[in-house]
Length: 151
Image 1 (tube, rainbow, N blue to C red):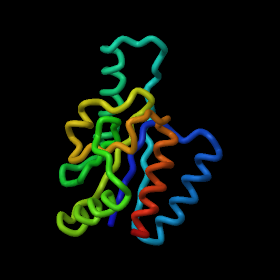
Image 2: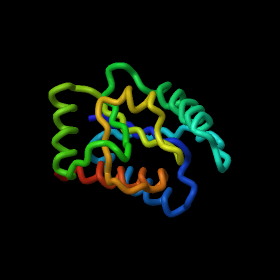
Image 3: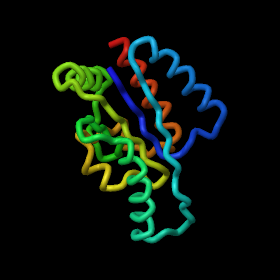
């Protein structure tokens, strides 16, 4: 199974980078996982809706550069479907076994994901109705991917 995580922005804090490294080491025993970080756009305070859309669309174009037509894209969005770990594992196994497609998870930046990505996604996933920092979300996703190895 091949899984790619595309995220906007780099992990800056040392403890998050260390957590990422540890999860990648654990996951590599089970399947191939690749992490791609695209540069986030500068977002000054007090942006208009139009400015926010422009920034998110610029980030989306960078993300879409790494996505091929035949890949199964899972966008992490607050309004997505909430699944248990077992349900997510089942969905991933179905995509891998029945559809034989590479899976890409996409994590947006501090402003969220562009509609361009949400529309391209094959599935919209939410881990919670709460908002999390996008850097922490990457670690939470890695934890769930790690659990997929054991379910």
